Length: 142
Image 1 (cartoon, rainbow, N blue to C red):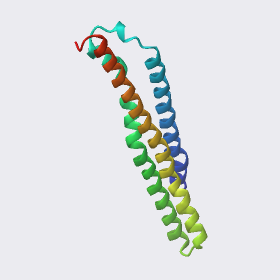
Image 2: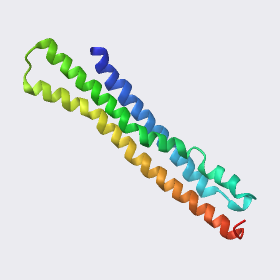
Image 3: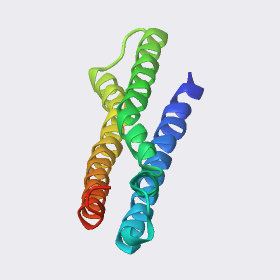
Image 4: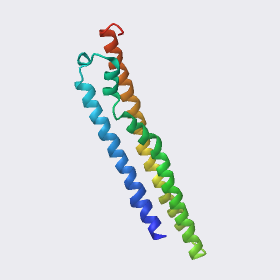
């Protein structure tokens, strides 16, 4: 069961941190693209739309799956705590509560990854729609 504890602490939480870094990296790259894009360079609306929405789906995927990955870590942490209770027979409530509190950290980190990812996805999608609308205005809705 020590392996389970290491898996939760380093595997699940490490993966959530990795997902957060990926989400923020893609968002920063998209911000730079949006700032420097010239909609006049695109003849067709669909090619502009493809350029604007590239990689945004990854941010949405991270935002929607991070809570579940955090929940997986919490379930494994609770299983580890219950296993320890079963092994030792009687445990002090302080040890039990500490084990459960530490198990919940995976869900908290999952939410800390998901909430900004969903917000970034929505912001980037809105910015892409604004650029597309400006292109349509400048090209008479072609």
